[in-house]
Amino acid sequence: MHFEKMKQTLQHQFSATIENWDAYVEFFHEKALAPGEHWVKAGELCSDFFYIADGLVRLYYIDAQGNEVNEGFYEEGSLLGPISSFYEETPCPYYIQAIEPCTLLVANYHEAHAYAADKTDVLEFEIRFMHRLFVSNAKRDAKRLISNGEQRYKWFCKEYAHLLDRIPQYYIASFLGMTPVSLSRLRKSLKSSA
Image 1 (cartoon, rainbow, N blue to C red):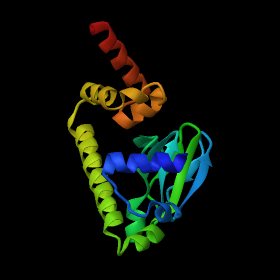
Image 2: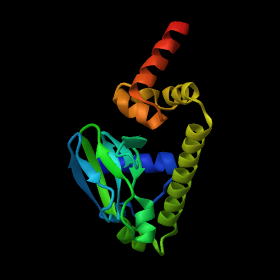
Image 3: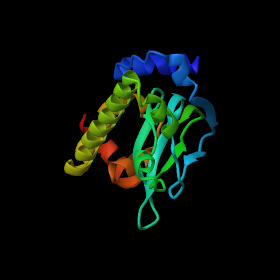
């Protein structure tokens, strides 16, 4: 069931038309994560990527002051992995942690990529995936860097409307670059002016 769901997602999101799907999915195995459990921690070497079949994860860093800084939230249907670690063979610079119970379909990037070397259908999917990841990260980072707190919050409510009830407010505050108290004040202010 999870593998069929992944196939449909890849076809829909990335126009992936992997000809020998059965051979490609052989690279994946299921892994369950409990809420609060880490898939990878900063400083660890990691060469795996995964598809989220069920659940919600967050990607975060620890800043110089020891604070957790949320960088992104990823739900069912997302592909994720420490790409810089794949290419540079360096430790992962961030943490990936389950917010909810998760079912992941995990594959080793190097093995999957070697399989794709002479298969244009799989390589085209890889290129589309990397392109989409780069563009979405660039848009997200630009919005967070050039907008004020209210603009960032309104953008978050629009982009992540379907996740608002699933993400703790203090995680949202960290993602938006504000304190939980500031976010609470902003939310009250926006409600009273609506």
